Length: 341
Ligand SMILES: [Zn+2]
Ligand SMILES: [Zn+2]
Image (cartoon, rainbow, N blue to C red; front, side, top):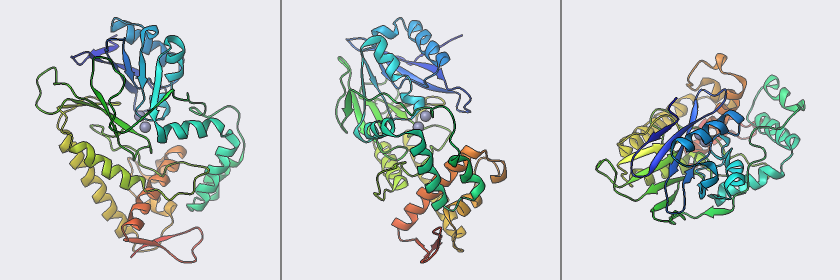
């Protein structure tokens, strides 16, 4: 089985499987430097995924113990999951953007019960029916995946050149999918001579065939009213202006024409916001709105976890519409319903 793909110019990819997930795998990029390979993301923390990562590095002519550093695009467990194991095996540094590093620290301090009650309160406020909230009130055994993520050794600063001796890899902060998501711009000529400015490791920010999940930033202690969809749309424009010759995303496959993909995603969200405004002719809670939105299958067939994610996505769109002055909460409604202005 081929486990490493050569993208030329000292960049290879290893497909690290994500167990029981339709996305299938995370593309972990292996970037050669003068001090040893640097990984962009590490993959899900699972024994099989670890074995695949190790086999992939061997196929690249190196080994986990040789890794010099780990740059993580964002804190999600399919990206940051194996960072601690790589660090243990190699002594590599691990770096994340400060906003996602803060989530990692907070997650490590949060007990599972606290997390469940936070989710229950949040869903109740969004108008979720009792049968959806009830399972969160019954404590369950075991930890949530990703509830003990590795604290980073360094924090990524927007615009900086990262510590990749002999390479030029610049961090571009692209909040939206998470508050500290970063894309990484390899400011070197494309090895195949494709026109454009270098290559972009896009994480989950820009994927060729799917629109990444944009929900509310999960934060049990912070009451700041954030606008993740607004952040995401701004970050898309930031990336569109970079005009990279090729995009190396964390899922699916590499692609060209980043500006075209950015336009398609901007149009997708414009269309979606317009569709939601039409639905908000009658006042709707986030839950009721999510029930009426279009998903990859009918609402009745959406599994439990996907419904929770869908409501968060509805909330981030409502946040945007409120911020744009196109929708408003209905005074006195409880749970709060929103209507178009
Ligand atoms: Zn993600
Ligand atoms: Zn991902």
